[in-house]
Length: 121
Image (cartoon, rainbow, N blue to C red; front, side, top):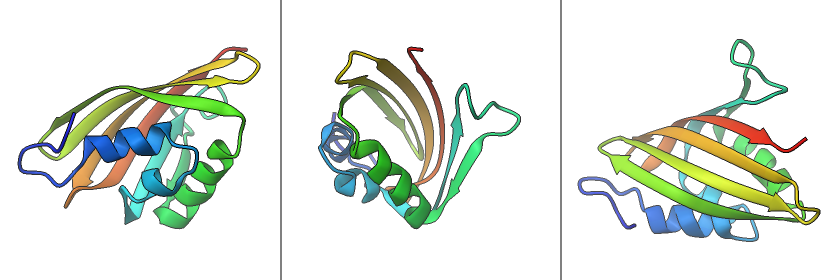
C-alpha cells in the first residue's frame, strides 16, 4: 500500500487509522464536509444512517474506538478519486464484524463513504 498516483490519499494512514487504538488518525482522512452512509441490519438501504461532517463522523468513530475490539484493514484499492476497502473487526468476546466501504476523494480526503457492515448475532 502507499499513496495512489495523482492523489494525496495515503493508504498507510488509512491502515494506521483503522488498526489504531483511537479515532484520531482515521478522522484526519475525512474532509470537513464529508458524509457517511451506513447500511446494516438496523439501517437498511432505503433508510441508511447518514453522518454529516467531521463532527458527527468523529463522534461515531470515538464510540467505535472506545469499545473493546480490534480492527484490521484487509484490503484497499485506490483508483483516481475513488477507493474501496475492507475492514474486519473482532470484539473481545469473539463477535466478528465485517465492513466494506466505497469512498470518493477530493484533494486526498474522504468526502463520501458508503459503508455496508454485518456482524455476528
